[in-house]
Length: 211
Length: 211
DNA sequence: TTGACAAATTAACGATCGTTCACTAAACTG
DNA sequence: CAGTTTAGTGAACGATCGTTAATTTGTCAA
Image 1 (spheres, each protein chain N blue to C red):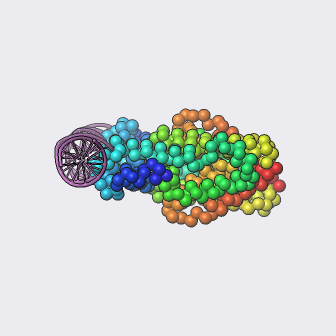
Image 2 (image 1 turned 90 degrees about the vertical axis):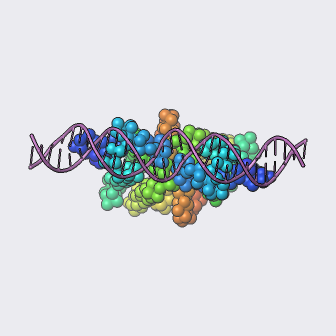
Image 3 (image 1 turned 135 degrees about the vertical axis):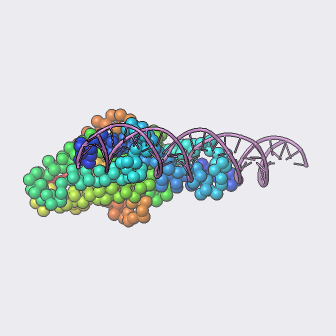
């Protein structure tokens, strides 16, 4: 994710180091409680040097948002156009269990987890964070799943229930687990029970929709 | 909630007004981004007068936490001791639909909603907020429901499934809906679909566990 | 080798931060 | 009514905030 935004050719990679430090600090204390001096200290430069790379402190946050947005559009969900061929190619069990893999992949990526934390902290103060959570995460995921379930129903591979309700029943527990997972992980606490719950939820869901 | 913490006999009620202003401001911008001068301006006093009521800015936040904790222990869930008589007295349908009522009651209380927002903002920076969310909210709710489901199973009023799994399947979607609800509400956006989802989820759950 | 440009430093700016101080006015207590 | 407590003001404290300006250092192309 960082590699794409900050190509290695850039000499010292200070611009990238600033983002890395900012993500770590913002995710722990929030944007407002982190000073530019804290960021630049972690990078190893003076505070004034930061302004050679970013116009303002807010532009750093904006860059982090943009990275997350782009990463989600690229990697989080397959494009709607490819949905039909996916649903035709893989059985519902495999499709749904992919949600488990994608969960483990997300919580295993410290960068993604930290940006998710930042979004949670800033969601009320900053309408950009709110927009990412509501549109990209919630609406995007549910819309994708609804379309997928509708296709499965059309192909007769799952029971003919309301696809939007199915999307909700499948995904919303995962949202809540993600929230709790990220919080437990913050103190290095045990998260195995949550992982197990996710898997059991998905398997129970598969049983509910099997035709 | 405020009435109990700040009895009317206190002359001007400045201490209460400070908390009210702080809750509103903290819930919008976060503790760190709100100055004591902003709070006291909203109350109508000078910043120095605040220190007649609270030793530090943090003590205001601490008071808010304590209020939320106590309110939850008093009103959120019936005491475990009374659980047996409740499960004996009301059918599972009524018990579970009570979760819908309690959801509507929570999101309809601006004070509770704002404190919930504060907890979300501060959850990483402040271990006290983290503790409230993980222990009082998550663990407390799931523990209560697990005990309730276990009793229902013992009385044969629901199917004999794993009570902890049932608690998870019932409650976690509600956690996520609450999060999204509070966020949508922040911009005054339409939340009717979410309310409907909650009710449909609970009714679907009732169907799943009916013996 | 020189000139250009990027990236760093030192120093400082005005503003704002949480908190404290000395003091005053009002309200309760004996 | 005198005396003490409570709640308020006005001013200031040292620290820190985001940001800018002037200047130096390092790097690569011409």
